[in-house]
Length: 612
Image (cartoon, rainbow, N blue to C red; front, side, top):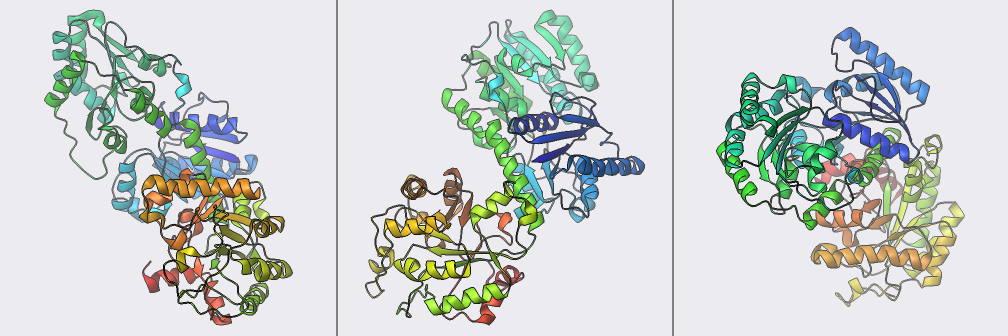
């Protein structure tokens, strides 16, 4: 993929570090990356282009817009990634009228004024780096929830020494932050109200101030720093900007900071006192980690709130830690490394790029139809999950007359990943899905689909010993027993080019199971089908259409690319790939109902009609 990052920071802020790390991770995978920023040089092998993106004067903004348009042409850019409101603004205007999507990462709270909500310049997808930021964007900025993707800052923990962390002697308190704006005010307060007592009470403790914009420290802070340096000499060091923050972190007993600094320190096993622009989160341990991470370790509030910090409480926490230092612990360190792993985050961002490209290419409703049994004669069943063979042939004739091209989720994914050119994506795609794997799918369905040239997606159970619809019959003996295909019959679908999807091991209601049992049903079904049928399994259908947030998360963690619902989900497939809206098909479908259920407006109509 060819990616253009647009940055407006004129100093090496956390957003710049984030963009640089993403660029290097994606370059290592073979993607082409261009960086457009205020800085002439950045620590990356990507091509760097300088422009005053942070300059908001109209004439300069116009020049920035024209420059972006030129870069799009020269590098055949496929996605633009902006990292500030100023960058999003010029990128949004530059991309108008093109088929190139815009992705914005929001690194902090946005100014709340009328234009913020009225003019959504953040593009097709928006990455929020922590949970509080997602709440802020939904509830205060009034951004569409389906646009927002929660993905944290990615960190390359390999930059830290492989050996276990050992606290230095004498102890070192490292305040690692930038010293302008709100963070500068926090630093000044610490210098005035906290560090004098700490340095007096703990005579072996050293204090280091590390970070950019030290000259912008508020005057009370400068005066307090001067006093401390005069009183304690080399025990108080104003290091300023450092090119080796990982080295500074590893040489500290306790890091005081927020955001990326806190993440890097915890991942390196160095204790953290989380203090940011928005709040004080305290010493981070297993009990406080979730809440601290939600605020990006003190930097971001979910809603407008006072920014007061109780410095006497902070001082007591600092005293308690220095009196009895507490290690981070292997479990918390491992969790932080997993949550913020750069390769995982970079892969997630790449999926956002792919999703944004597909939403730009296929902006409307992509009909995904759900069938089950295709019997020769009508069945006496209250569930009505069948369409007779003759009726189904009428469906296929209708699709062909209407010009629909059948694709699978595997096909869709190939277009999204760039494995197939988007120019070849069909004008009117349709995905035909079939649940459970009944024998009549082999005898009646497969020959018809081959005759009309339509591929399909069939969702099978991972347990090949299940040979009838026990989930219906065992609960209600009046329901007709329907046989499930043999392994050989299932392999015929693979040979015919169908996509095989997973439908759990036993057709269980995942929402009624303990989490670990649900995880096994999901994970084992993927493995069993791939091993037993020799087919890649990329999509999962929730049995009975039942799911919740935990189940969706388990499906994603099991390695699936899609989770298919029933009569619920997003307005667009890319609103949420793990809540894909499927249209239920019934025995009495007519040309009129088929036209309606495949119409571009059907999803909007259904939500209006059914309120879901």
